[in-house]
Length: 249
Image (cartoon, rainbow, N blue to C red; front, side, top):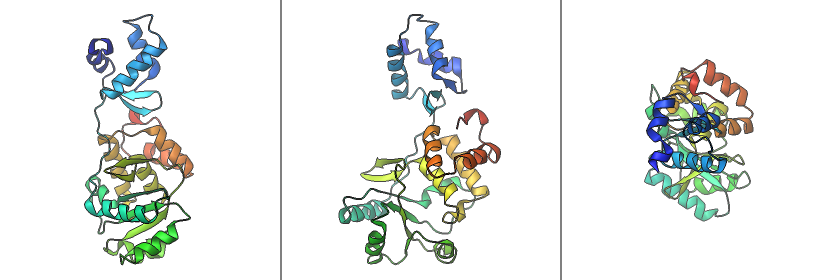
């Protein structure tokens, strides 16, 4: 199968530069002029499955080996998610913590907050439930609460409304946001994530693009859902040092 996929030849031919589905088809057509679309689609699937190519956006690939974003999920996070899920079993939600960003920042944040996003209708009830077992809990905090309490060094739980169709994934039996969702939310919710703005945001984005696989179609779609697509794209292209050959959003 490796001979049919021509893995080594693909890596040598395309190098580190992005290429389209058409480019890849034309590459294979050099060796198999009668290659049909069904066989080609199977080869693309096999290449992805073997980690030979990664998707930058729909129909655009790269052979650079990058990691999937798989943050370390602590026991505390798992327990909190389980408690809320048990109490509110029919609500969609996700959970993550801002300490996941520490390794991608120049200066460490004073606090590490847990972000729990849940259906808008359930959010007030979840907030009340968590207040019974935790001291520092906030529901959709405003700028005053963020500046005076949340970034003061205390670890807080922040309950937010979950935006419909948010890109999420399951890991270790909990639901967390994808890397694309985190990137967009950091940009969109500037008051909440004030600690991660400016030079820190640039560095986070640059490190994310350098280290991890980022689905730029997902990034674009969710940014559009949050009404920041154009400004986010402008920021990535004009304010960061991300290789412009990698930006297809």
